[in-house]
Structure formats: structure tokens, C-alpha cells
Length: 309
Length: 309
Image 1: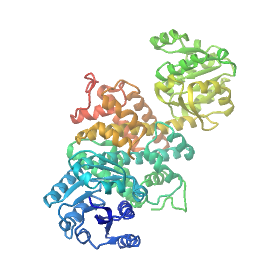
Image 2: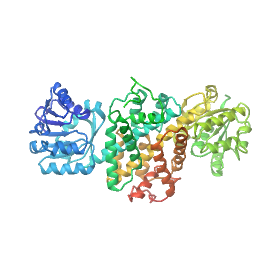
Image 3: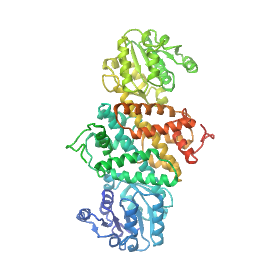
Image 4: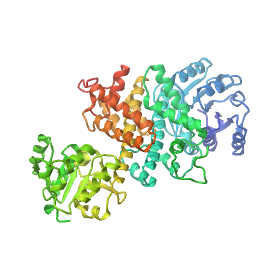
């Protein structure tokens, strides 16, 4: 790969994850162009000294690397292959990194279309949240040709603390990410059910947090999300709608493979109920508010937010 | 409290947890009498130099402390207050520790009956598993009068690495344990669903374990139980039937309090399905075998155990 300032990277999607990745790359001296439909995000990126472009085709002109960090497979297809999509505009022999959580089949389709267009494709779902995106410490659950991984290693090292290379074929990275999201979603729903159940039994919730995080009932998500409930802070670190989407992917795959996913499907319904109650764009710990609202329980409040959509 | 060798402790229930506790106390020099309906367990305890008795009433004669480590509230009631029960036989001013997982109401009832009979009662559910019981490193989620905790401190220090004193009233310890079991049960079911789902997608399960345990999808139970699946070893460290019982308690409490527990109830059904398929006494990771059997997937085998009840 060329030196950073000669390497043209186009980041499509300046949401909480994409913005952090673009910012990390900019800091490291890469020539980064940001693209988003949200003008405010583009202005924030320009204020940091980044280039911006009005659409993927313009942003990806002669790019060495396009990183698609949009919400789902449909948006990824749109920004890569749609009208004014990125792939046709890239310099030949470029690389496309696809970061959205999606069904493995979709990642495989995108890989085939990229290769057909003369570009390499890496299936690189990410995890770690907005803070670690900004600090360049994401985890990448990736798959694709190892020589392509090697080629963009400086970019990966810039955005991620840990890069798993899980196979030579697109789709494998996506599948690992889906397994992670199944567990993450179930654990959030379980954490919310458990802490609200504890409230229903009249327990001291701070004490519950202390005991459970030191016990066999702990999960990464319990430890990370229950503080949002204890502080009554449902500003979205990660939104309910992310899990209606990701557990929806699990449900689709399960149905397609004829594999039953009873617990993931129940968790999905809890996120759907929370979204239906008007909290889809709030923090995913809002599942606890949904249950508390149903059961007439009062969870800790901050700024009178509890019970509001 | 008197010195260990003058302190008479009766441990009722020499299952995997009770045996380990009795063994730890014996090692520390307490005068321990073990009671169990299982003659083989009594013989093993006698072989270590412990005293044994044919029933709770005989074992608890003049005991300073009775520890009930049986399976559930009904058995606890039986061994404490039933015909040939322990409480009536104890020296007055003794202490009863109740360790089974149970609904808070039951623990409160037992406390009242003990106090009426002139004994103190501590609501002390335990967690940590058989190995930590044997090494004296359990976690106690306890409640009851703090002066009673102080009085039996040498015993607690002998059996537990960590003793939470969660309130002055019986029932609070039980409620904390139930919250822990809700999460533990859901996380086991989710771990089994996720690893079998990964198999259905054709992933390398060892790799899945490596990636998930380093990611936000991790839980204490995923980390602890998935190795049983990877090794195809379903010998019971903790049995499926434990969770049909403990998640049954969650379901009962939820219904009684009119608090919905969708995710715990789904996990309960998965344990019931696994028990129905003949694996109730096998390791709780057998939920993965149940799903694999339904879906015609082959999980790792050890000694041809996979697929057998």
C-alpha cells in the first residue's frame, strides 16, 4: 500500500461508527473523503479537515479503498452498486470494505459483484461502539483473501485494536458478527428483564449490579448496559432499532436454514415492543423502561426522562 | 462462636454442593455430621472422617449450626420442619442456614418458623459450583440479622470466598439468587442456541468461541459452558433439571407479582424440551444437543455421547 497521505480512502456513512473510523484515518494522515446523506455529519467531518463529497460516486473517484459503514445490507448495496454508487467510480484494483451487519449471503453477493467490477472485497463487520471507533480500537470480524487483508493492513491497524481473519471467503465475517449480535441482543434483553424483575421484587438495584457483575449471571452487556438504567440515561449509545434490525437478520437466517432460534426471537420481540412504544431511537437499555412501564414500576430517573419516549 | 472442634455443624444434603461444604468444614476442624438419603454419599463422607446420621433429627441433636443444602424449598421444609426434621432437635439458640434456591416468600416463612422454635435463621443461597464448594470458595448471597452472620463468621469464611450481606430480613438473599439464576439460565440457553446456530451456518466452532469470548457477546456462562459442547462432554457439572427448577421459580414469582418475564420463560421452555428429550440429568449445556438433534446437526462428540440421552 502507498504511504498514508497518498492513500485515498472514501468512508461512506458518517454515523457513530463511520465517523470515528474516518476521524482515526484522518488523524493518521490518510487522504480521507467522507460521504453521508446527513449534511450536519459532513460539516462536522469537514471541520476536522476531512474532504467531503455529495454522493458515493463522487467520493470514490480514484479511491484506493472504499469503506461502507452504513446501517444494513440494502444501504450497502445502494452505496456500492446503486445509481451514483461507489464501485464503478473507483480506480481499478481498489478494495471495498463492507462493515454493516448483514446476512452472509448478502456479503457473498457483494463480493462477487465487486470482483466482477475489478475490485477486491473484504467482509469486515465491526464491533466495539462509538468510543472505540473514535479511538481506533474497534474489533473487526473479517473474511476475504489474506493478501487483500495484507494490502490494507495500515488502514486496519489504524481503525482496529483487533482484526480477526476468519477465512478466505466473504460471508464468514458476516456470520461471526451475526452470532455475536444474537448473543449481544439476548443479553441486553435479559439484563433489562432481570434488573426490572429485581425492581419488582423490591431489591436495591445498585446492590444487584454489584452482586451480579461478580457472579455467574454476568455478561458483557449486563455490565455495560445496566448502568444506563441505574442512571436513568437512555441517550442512545446504541439504539433499540439496531437490535430490531440485527435480531431480525438472525430470525431471517434461522428461518432460511430451518434452524430454530427461540431465545433470539423472544429478545427480538422485546426490542420490537420497545420500538413500538416509541423508544426505537433511544438507547437499547430502554427495554427495561418498556417492561417497567408495562408493570407500573419506577426505575431511576435522570432529568425526568423515565417513561418518556 | 466456640472453637471449630467444639462447634457442632450438621450439613443436610451431601450433593455436589453440600458435600464440598461439609468437606471444607471437616478439613478446618469443625465437628461435622452429614445427612443424606443417598447412602453412597454418606459412606464417602464417613470415609473422610466425618460423622453421619440417618436423618436430620438425629444429625441435628444439639447442633450449633444446621446447614440445609438440599434441592429446593419443599425439601428444605421437609428436612427442617418435617417428621424427624432438624429444627426441633437442635440446641436452643442455634442457627439454621438455608442454601437452596427458592422464592423469597418461602425463605421468609422458614425464618419465621425457626425464630418461633428458638433458632436463628439465615437466608444464604450459594453459587460457584461443585469445585468451588470443595475448595471452600463459594459465593453466598445472604440476608438475615447481622449479629447472626457475625456469630457464624468462622463457618462462612471456611466455605465461602465471598459473603454478601444483603439485608437484615430473610428473603432478600433468595431474591438476589433468583435474579442471578434468571440471567444464568438465559445465558446458558443463549450460548447453546448461538453455538448451534453457528454450526448451522457452517462456522468453525473453536474459532467462534475464541472470537465471542473476546467480544461484546460474551457472558460468564458462554465462556464456562461452551467448552462442554466443544468437547462433547455432557457429564453433569450442573444439570438441566436445576434450571427447569430455578427458571420455574422465576416464572412463578413473575406470575405472582404480575411481572412479565418473556425471555426467562423462553429459556425455561428450552430446558424443559431438553429434559423431555431425556437429558434432564445431563449437563445443562445439553440444550445445544437438543437443538442439534432437532436440526440434524452434528456437534463435536466425545466417546460417542452426542445424541444419546
